Image (cartoon, rainbow, N blue to C red; front, side, top):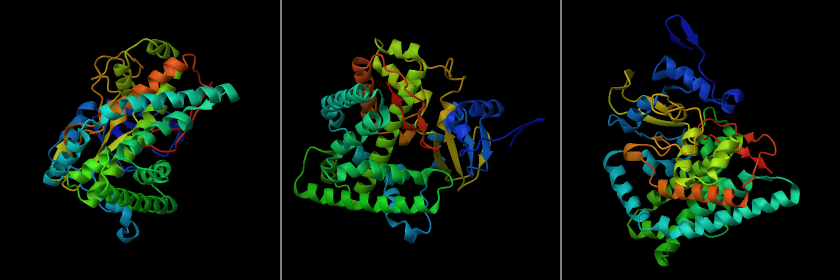
Length: 395
């Protein structure tokens, strides 16, 4: 419960399917009561205003301090991926690795991939149209949203078959560990997927040392990124780049189809503002944690050293102090300082590539299937942190 004066309000349950269907009213209640609240079900305080979330993401007294999944000897591969991830480092180790990765990433990879990404999005939407023609309906998630990002990440990294086909399954399985209350079976599956990913990327890195290509792994090898850091970087690109983009496309298309006026506006509107609005309106990543490295506070809420605190990015995205008509979808929105790609030292290096993928998908859909509509209610994934759909049937 959150109490303000004589008013007590129940906190949201991240496992409640009614909350997962639409978390934004619950976030609005919390924002009205204050910018930061303790949340026993999540085990951490949560920031709910845009200002508090921004301060949390930028705060120099807050960092990403990785703690191994326990028992550590049962999660060797999962812990290796995260211990060596750019996202889980601070200070000099983060600065050094981010510089190497940014240098490799900025060697024209997004520009190199742009024609290929647009062509792939067109082919996948053609497949979606063919499915509708044959069966009366097709699934946006399986045909387009889940396929496009994993193919793009595989192309970026230069992953060949059969590992390329396995990437999506590895990513989906590993990220379940980020949800509250994961059971033992899913934890064990995440470790198996992590081990398979580690083996595959180590093999690919060794191959690229002998035979460099035009892919990011070759550039990371050439930059001197050591083996475990290279594997951790690739895992971050897969899980952040793939999972987030799948859910931006899925959540975004659902939002557009539930707001047919906005779908009609998108037919002739610039794509760049629309992409930012879809990321804001129903964010794919709802929660991002940091840990106090010294005693500090966020929006007046004390955060002792060693305490984790989470930014609820979906709550920040609907803050009326920052966004005009925050609960309305507006694909032409011009002022849109959403936090979907983070802030500060952990701002997403892959943001330009993610924007390209979402824009390519939207462009292909509005061109090839201008009369797209929902064929049935979608099925939602039972997850809070990574918010997305299992199915999105359309006709």
